[in-house]
Each structure stands twice: as structure tokens, then as C-alpha cells.
Length: 293
Image (cartoon, rainbow, N blue to C red; front, side, top):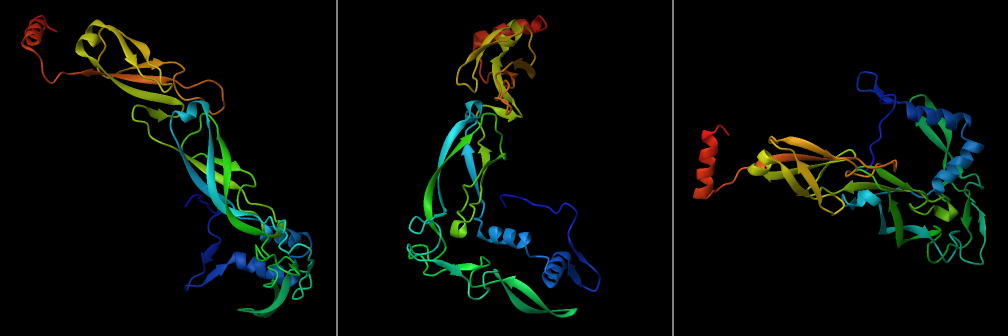
């Protein structure tokens, strides 16, 4: 899934032998309902939670080059938005919102529940008003009393420089709109940085593999190296360079997420062995061979 959650203190559902399971969460709810601990501020909070819109989770792909300066992305998302006809209240314009006749405004109704300890009367969410305690006198013709409708919405997301794959950006209140003026959920965008054909990323540093001819490795010289900034730079190859040698170029890596500077670029030099050589080249190599090279 998009988000993985774990119990901080282990699994609350533990076996007690003989295939009997005891859910501590259910017990807590049962005791709360039996003795009325769910009233007052807890009840108001539950009503707000019931109206709150769901969080939305998405994935956005960007190029490695986009991590240098950051990038603005605009996405189109099918989600619940506030109903414009009823101003997200759920009632037809000009009509009232009345107290629910089933729960008399409490948002809860009594229900008899049978458990292994016996039968208990408990409070459950009112199915008529869905726990809100009130209902539209006449539901909105567009949203059918929900206070929200499904529609495409364009959302701009600023992706900062230095971001790495699987980092998540939270955009407050850009999830689903809540029911009947309830608080909207949040939008979570997981960033996926696509692999680059030339560079490998490790943290804020970049790695590049460059092939150089045998003569350049022996005699030294300069080679042109591409960078993530799309500008080639000249790299000095020391005389007598061995295959596999790594050279560092400062400040040519990825922009640090903190915004303070950039990482480095590491270039691994690999000596290119030609597949075919001319007769003249072969004669020269034979001479070098005789001289111990």
C-alpha cells in the first residue's frame, strides 16, 4: 500500500489459547459505551471526525534533473469537492437544517448488544444522520444532502530541490472535502525520481562511469564529462591513471534538501580496450611491449 502502519507496542489482538481471541480495542469501546465515557468533548470530536474528508495518496514521477532546482507540478485529481449549490451544507437553498428525529440531536442511538458477559445497552452512531445529530429539511438536489460532489480539481504542487525517491509531501486540506461543511482531508504525494541513463544517485552525490582510451590513461590529459546541469566540463586525467580510478568533482551533485549547497560528482575512469586495431597500431604496441609497457 501507499502508507505502511505498524503497532508501536506490538499486536493488540493476542491469542489466549484454544483459538480464543480477545480484542482489547473492542473491550475499550464497550466499556466506554457502557459507562458513557464517550460523551462531552469526545462526542463532539467524533462528530467532527465523521464529517472529515478522507486523505488522498498519490505518486508523482519526476526526472533526476528536476531535483537540482525543484519543480512545480500541476495534477488533475478526481475527488470530493464542496457542493456549490448548497454551499456544502447539504440542504436545498432556502430550506433549514433540523435536528435528527431519530437521535434527537445526539448523533447516537441506543442498541442492545449481546456479549460473553451478558446483554448490554450501548450507544451507537445514528444511521439516519450518520452521527451528526442533524439533517437537512430538504436535501440538496445536486449532492443529495452530502454537501459535496465528485469532480476533477487541478492542484499545483511545489516539489522542492534535493528531494529523493519515496519522500512524501503533505498538502494540507487538499484531500476529499468533508461531509456537510466538515474539514477536508489532506493530500499526500509520494515522489518517485526516475532513473537516469547516465548518472547514479547516492544521497546527494552523483556517480558517472567514463571510458578513456589507453593513451589518455598513460599520458594523461583532459576529457569532457557531462553533468546533470546539461553542461559538459573538462576533467583532468592524471598521467598513469589505472582503470577504475575515481575522481571527485565538487558541487556537481544534487542540491541538498536543506538548501545548503550541493553534493559532489564522482567519475570512475575505465580504460577502453579497442576491439580492432590497425597494423600500424599493432606494430607500435609490439614495440611498447618489448620495452615493458
